[in-house]
Image (cartoon, helix red, strand yellow):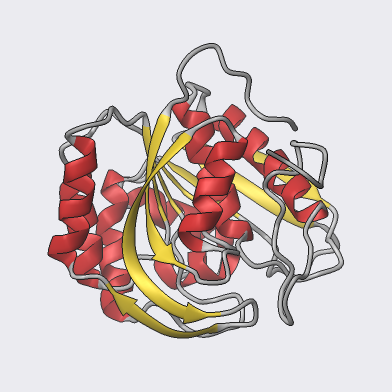
Length: 270
């Protein structure tokens, strides 16, 4: 997987997410992944976090009115080809995002429904989970891991989870299998006609901070380029896998993906 070829101006993707001071996840991950697939990122901060590569210690959601103002200001100035949503932080922020999206029904939207940090800290209470369920009617593709899928859909069986999420008017569901007890990582895509595809990749040796952000942002960027959802999902998974294979461990916790793996040399990049 290499960077998407460019034949004109980079498509613009607006991402709603939190700020991660470690740079492994959140807005910085989205910026890097979107750049990696040849897009320009617009960023709306939904929450400030206190975290490192080990875990999240604190989340302070941004005032919903300010979230909406950030988004509407840039949307009045720049044409956006797709949206990506990550950490929301509060039900009020989720509602503000839904309000913005209601004015842009033609653009694809990818939701990474973050409910917990990689270190295990919960990041979504029941009010936010309920708000995310309501937000799904604005979403084109939702990319939960298996734990998040079960929390949102309130089923144990993953196929039933996909059916439940689609019943909330989200046509495409990609459930990732990192947390499952399978020899390989198995990701399953469900579409309007039901089960659509199954993707497998080897289990890598480490734990990674920002892998879900990478996958969802790359998918949004590839949709902004005009790819159909199955093709965008497949390419986003290849991009994510290579980012993880090139990951490093600069701190004392999880490995951080290298979303610029495609841009040699490793030293002296300009």
